[in-house]
Length: 296
Length: 317
Ligand SMILES: [Zn+2]
Image (cartoon, rainbow over the protein chains, first blue to last red):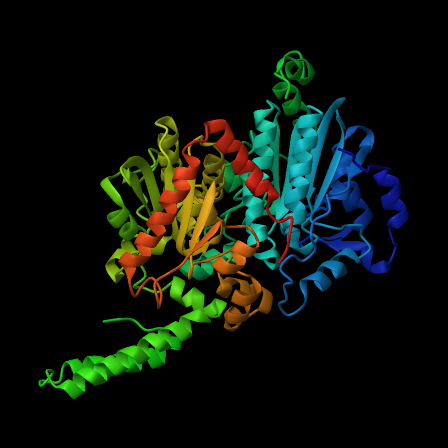
């Protein structure tokens, strides 16, 4: 496969792209409502410096903190048919898509696939972007997951999926639903190759993404206080007409209910991933194990 | 008493006239008999015309028709020696998912499906076909059982969706659906899914990631209910009709998208008018498809199942 790769020094790029507009100087923490100096907040990986609340971050903000020296390669997603159903609600889907892509933040879809080393070991990361149409999963996201899985298998590297999604992309109708099966196939290929698949669940992970690859990891790591569940809280409330219990569908609730292995602070994510992938790569490392496996 | 859908009003009027005439004491009267025949012909004509051009939203109504045959009706008619099996061996038995062992056309099979229930009491008992995690784990268990004994699996899809509730979330609804999809993909025996009514999102797909997906003519299958879609994208569920059209949720559209393999014709006026006829038509299609799959070994089945889903979405409408 011929991957078009562009080498990025994300920190530099972020500096260049940043506009020092006054309204960006301060950010209000949605949890404790403290006004935070945006620069401090970013330096702290968007974790509130006052109360520790983990704010939503986009893949390009997150990735530098995961890979060695903040360096990684981005892999463009495979081309897929645009607006396969010619969907129109209050707005045409293709227009909505174009608008989301024209925001100037570089995002072209709700998924970013990257590769790089973590503690000297190659890892493939597929990170979802809630900032792009609510992180909704359509054909492009599904296809990106398949590509990431194929890369992991071809390069004998662990796959790390970082979820942040409201669910399936409704504007792609049944084809968005089919991504549940397609992404399950993708992570199945990684598992079958004897490689680790680690699912990192961040705020929010609900709907079709939680009901497919995000809940099928060898290991599930959640960021603190993230909403994780099948149905969104509002859907549940309106169905059962009952108030939801305190902390319902939060990471800590899932930990208590046996659905995730670990709740890990964003500052500890890189070292946790490094430790786990090393432990799961076997005593002699994944390379020698892959050599012993029958070739296809 | 028959239930008529809104768009069936002219048919309802004709049929009520017929039933009035039949109750006229002097029913041996030739004129009355002739009038009944004449009206009956009108009904047929009207039914044919109406059902030949159902809109997507009308199909949603037909797919949810209370008299439409549900999973248990298919099992009762198509499966001999049916032996229901219960429980997920972890928490409980979810009656939204029915299933067990039996014989289909003489061959042992595992059959399972979502059951909506056909009267108020049954609907409550089966939770309107909305399964909780234990329902999906029961489905996984039955699929694994089939795999172990090399039995083909037939799944009957008919659900508004997986149940959105506190208890369901507490026990891992998302994981249960995901794992069920994974189980569909892992078993090395033929898996045929028949969408008989409402294919509601992940809750349906959980038992329909299959080698072959067949759909009744008036069944629907979508990523979200049209009401749900409308309330999110149009910010009002009064736009459900438009959402039903935009989502392309009819069997005919899904066949064009290559998401399903075959559309099974329903008797005139829909499956609810002649349930046995509808079930038999579905049964013979399933029989034909299972015969095609019978020769394939486990690895081939799994590989082709994967390829089938990986190929989906490469083309639009
Ligand atoms: Zn705070």
